[in-house]
Length: 342
Image 1: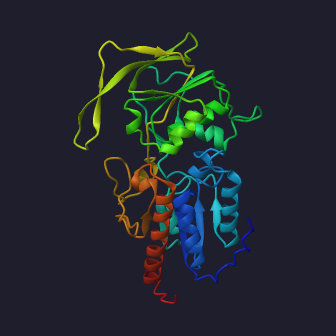
Image 2: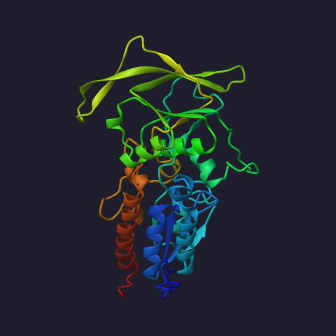
Image 3: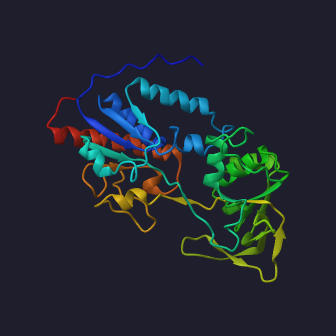
């Protein structure tokens, strides 16, 4: 593939915009604004830009070199990226406005993992899919020299049926696990993962324990995971959404012998930004409330998009939200500054 020619910087319009999070939504918003002449600074909590593209999606699905190239392109058109900058801790949203930013776009994703609240979740060897994938993909835990090594497990149970569960299972297999189980409480037909992701996992030898629900994680004398106690499920009557609810089959308990359990049952936005930003409305799931077409939030000059608004969704949707917000921020900033030169 021929390399695209180096992008040119656009003449600055004298206006500054801050972007929170260097994931798909933030990178897209920043790129579009930079092309309109804005001086854009991205504040990223982790030590590397890319968000879920670098910490969540494994190398075998998205080579990191592609992401790095896109980020270099953004830097070439003038986007500044400040890593290790946690909004809500290192700076607040109010601090950004005080530093002269016309507007702020929040694209901080949904990085707070959910757990089942069953006994044994605090044992060693029990991780959220978020931590597991971040260690493997971003922190190179699979290398012996890594600062954040990961235990080489023999048998792994991944709880959940989405794309993230498939990624975690396939990573575990690549780390040398003999048996990797996907434990999911509904049938394969109800799995939220894309069909091809399920097929790829099967081709690689991932074992599917469907209609199975964990009830407890069992530990050994070293407080490490040694097994996962499960119960068989059957699909009952459809609930209000039309999905058939899983019901326990009495007396069907059994134990899978595993030394690692990865919880991949969803994530929600980190509460740090909402807890430190007055006037920013969120819903009962902790997601920022924002208008669909523009990303406008309840706080003037603050826009949001991607998983921090929708909850965990797709990269494409997050990028679309970043694009929509960039247009809205452009209109707002020019109106606010009285600069009508396009």
